[in-house]
Image (cartoon, rainbow, N blue to C red; front, side, top):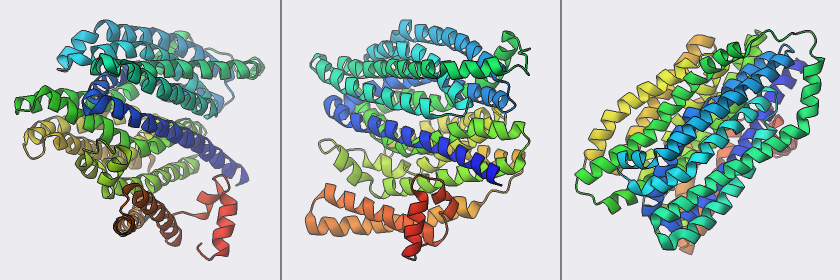
Length: 536
């Protein structure tokens, strides 16, 4: 029992490291977007978003599946002491990623003008070119991250993520500011250069960490005399591609939703009488405000999903069904405990949040109100995807994503074409896409693993507490604003009150359990104090 508790705690600790790092990285990314939005405006942000969407697509093609695939392959070998085989997976994967990353980076650079023209935004050409080296850099970095995660440590990934985002933030804002006098296209290109420099800083960081640990890694490889590495490089490549390609396909399909929105929004809105400038502005609100704010809480599910792949793969190799069941329910519950209140909070306080963050340009609150619920379904889809990848069913998330996108395309056409909806149609289409894919993934998790999902603890309790929280936030904001007439102060007070009451309600209805608190830093102390006051 002690051993199993230790293993579960290790999984949770590794997940929490990524959760914290992912949240810090996303928060830094969110913070630097505020001055960038002020520099570029909605129009310039639309150009920036176009270039970044193209980068995201090529990033997915070159390396999105590598961390999960490498971590799964490495962890399954480490679980049975095959350190030589794990290290060979790392070396072969590094060669593959370098080749694929270079090809994708070259296509992106030399085809920038053609791609921008197809998406009906020629101004994005410079952004695409400037971001092309980042595809090559991140492909290499992904293998290092996957190897460390497979070896049971998420700390190198966490550190490199934070360093990457800090450098990205500094140079994105600085270069945007430097080039704004030359025009929106040049300023947006300067902003994207920050992302390339950030990825380079992330790669250098994780390579230095690898050099620090290389002696220990090689010692384990040398001491592995029981297992001779019989796998050829070709066999490892086949396993890598068979694992990574379905993951890449699923992620690429989701990434395509942004490209679909780009193409359809620009085409349909201009056909319906919107000018090119008006279209860029609306697209800037969609990507620079709605997407940025809704993906901030999703960083939690992304981190848990990343941590759960090697952990579940290790339990599967050992045929530990009880551990698999416990980890799946734990991961789902942690994700929903955070995602559901985040969704409700964004929806209730949408206009106030945008007024606080973008005081000079607060338009776009309706997009956040309508699309806030997508946080829940995107988070659920990501965590279910991580579970399926961990148990080796990597094709299912790709199928689920495909089903979602197939429904989204005709929905986009009819909804964006509606004069009353226009850009809101893209948000609705994306939300429905996530609803479909998350449901397919979750049902397949249940069917394959045959686990009993605790729907009450995972969904009903967080929903109940979040609705009460949303009501408290709404009342607190309006009451405070009535007294002080200050949006920023009223918003902060309402968020603090909402978070406190959500936490208390979750404790009262046992949505947060003793073992949850015990597995987080200072958790035991928090539990003792809450017990003393009779809250739990």
